[in-house]
Figure 1: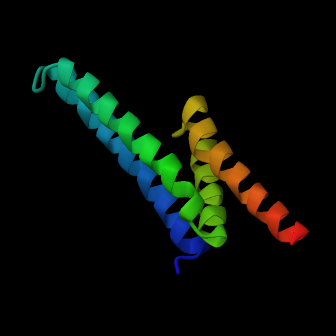
Figure 2: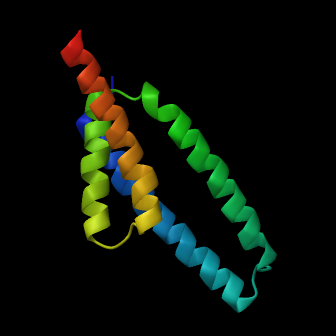
Length: 107
């Protein structure tokens, strides 16, 4: 079962990967290598991936979630995670983690 270090690594790699894709798409669109209408397609694809991410969160292990939160907090401090992204990718997993701990405490 993946543990905290795996969640940490995934958070770092996804933020860095997202940043690189964003820079490349912007550069390609500004130079005319891809039509700017393709940016809308990538935004819609990103929305689908975000929804699937949220739906998968309850199935992640607690240690993995903790590692994810720690990695995302570090990336947020570096300025690579915007405010809305932070809410989606940090607050929602944090709420899931708290609900899990409260559930275990009452059992």
